[in-house]
Image (cartoon, rainbow, N blue to C red; front, side, top):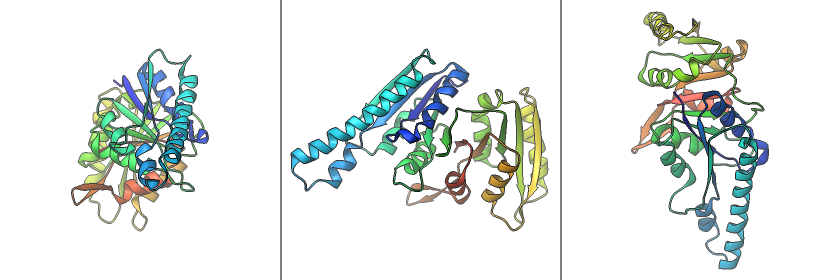
Length: 276
């Protein structure tokens, strides 16, 4: 059961839909919700290290004020909707916000982060990656076009028979049990074997034993990228959430997002539940 949720608060009020998603999740599970806001002090001090100290202090104070405003908006939204809520403002310059957030997320059931806006710089991409690979906990990435809370009308579980997708479906079980309909989607392409269909049926049967109403779907993608096929299928079926494994590649002992995960996170139109 999901009883403890962490959300990264956005500095830009136009991106506060992540708060609505997190609050609606907490309402759904009667869970505690913690919002964390970063003043980005470390970045500012490095970027403006040559400026006079009083100028740097003014910039940092303004950054803290913006971070506090994000907390105030979060508190106002959650005040009359949640029985257990907390917030934290982080201005510790000892580590980057993505790393600090990932470390915090280890002590929560689930974290919620906004998708980066492609038209503006942010460290949200690094936050999602850090939370996914360093926290050991699942993360929900919220599309920047999101305008409402979480909807569980139709949840799509992407299944390839691998470890990451098995972990994601297992972690998502509390959400799947709340969903009106759950579909297991397997992509058959030139690298697939006939076992894909059997695997889809097997995980479908497993979920059915948990009391879920399951549809198993197999779609072909002989010449199209897997992520694009998933995105097109999700749009065609009016899915409201995607559950998938977060895939990565090891590079000098650091994880970077794999191709399918990266494409999904850059082009998603519904929240994506990720586990690694």
